[in-house]
Image (cartoon, rainbow, N blue to C red; front, side):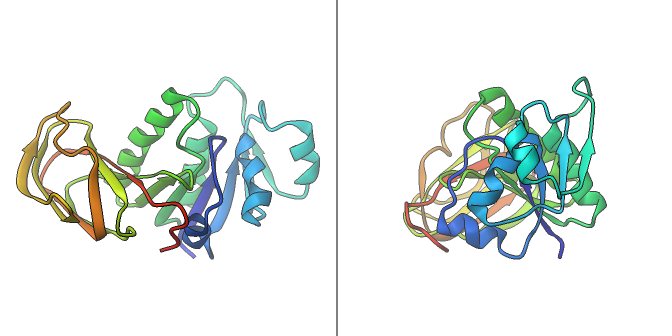
Amino acid sequence: MTRFAILLGGDMTPTARLLAQIRGARVIAADSGMMHAAALGVVPELWVGDFDSAGSELTMQYREVPRDTFPAEKDATDGAIAVEEAIRRGARDILLLGGLGGQTDHAVGLLGQSISIARRGFSCLLTSGLEEAWPLVPGRMRAVLPAGTRISLIPFGDLEGLDLAGVKWPLANRDVALGATLTLSNIALGPVEIGLRSGHGVAIAYPPPGADD
């Protein structure tokens, strides 16, 4: 199995759609991200971090899970360490659960990290259950979204040659400058096709409550 779910310490709602996305995935928990394991019905194969925020109750509950402990003063977040371990174990698809909401600095940092992951050739999805995000890098991709999903594309630099199909307001070969709001709050009509010639950014989607596809 090359799909790995990384449990992070941010907001998470275990919707039917999220549970379907992680079905069959291998799981690694990053520090306090272990708090989501019970709600997801999973037991991670590894628990990494400095364990400064996991708490003694989680530590006792999951004492059988193998742990890699790191010093609090380190040059990477616990989530980043978990991602690298997943890649070392053969990950090709990486799901970051609990990476949205909560602290803005951590959420934005994870969005940037997702772009870095994609530029290395791996697929990446961040989700809280109620909100999803994935990196935009040059190439073409398809996002399976329920009809009626609100979707926004956020440039992290100037975007060139953007194609956007399967939405209420499609685009063809458009350039979108950093800071432009052209690509905010579109509506998916079903699966969305995105093509990009140059640049990078993120797409953020809000599937309707109860969506399971």
